[in-house]
Length: 294
Ligand code: ATP
Ligand code: MG
Image (cartoon, rainbow, N blue to C red; front, side, top):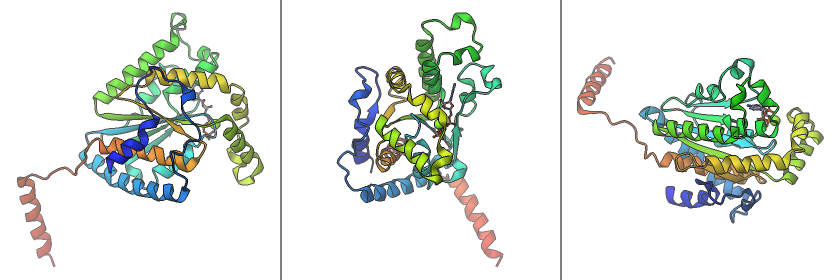
């Protein structure tokens, strides 16, 4: 199963910042898939396989999986998370949506609130937005730095490079400890975002999703694209690769994300823990007692 998946996701992977340009990555590619139904059938298979693997991950209690989702508004983070994780036992997965930091969180360095929520062994954690916001939204709106109560010497020209370094070190540390890290940038076009925001305004059932702030951020589109390009280039590594996923077609986004997760779990070659002879004898004895009860 893993070989074709590996090939399918390879075009979207970034594991080194060298020569990385966001404009080289398509927002609308469907990689030869024309048929949405075929993609949905494959997704269902992937989801089923993932659910079996997740049980083994949990039973083994050695590794954990961290999935980070970043995107412009309306790129489809929520829907992707919902569809891709639909078959997984909720006890083994935590989803955290990170918003603007609270005053308690601002009293700590920027990685603190994320470090607390890193996955336990055996678990899968999803970060819906993450510490990358601290080099994205905060970079586009440097005035947020004043809320962060940093000492003046920490707010120099090098602040973004220092933050990238901290992030690389943080991810490297966790990867060494057994956390598999995969990062997704759902790459939507400006036009498609416009269409989706319009449909949030037009359709009453979608009205609740509309936030006026989305329009305010849309004005900064190019600055965000540059900030993403920079952040991805600076933090794409072998142990914590980025996937720049075309996000203009939601069904394709979901298939790529599922593929990446399947590939990550496959790389662990998971198995249920083996029971040793002593334990097996013990279980046999208990079984015999239970059978005699009737
Ligand atoms: P939706 O798809 O529902 O809009 P969302 O992830 O955009 O989901 P919102 O509640 O709309 O959720 O937005 C959260 C906001 O919090 C984002 O605009 C994000 O940029 C902002 N945010 C996250 N982290 C930080 C941070 N460190 N500093 C400032 N703003 C942040
Ligand atoms: Mg939003």
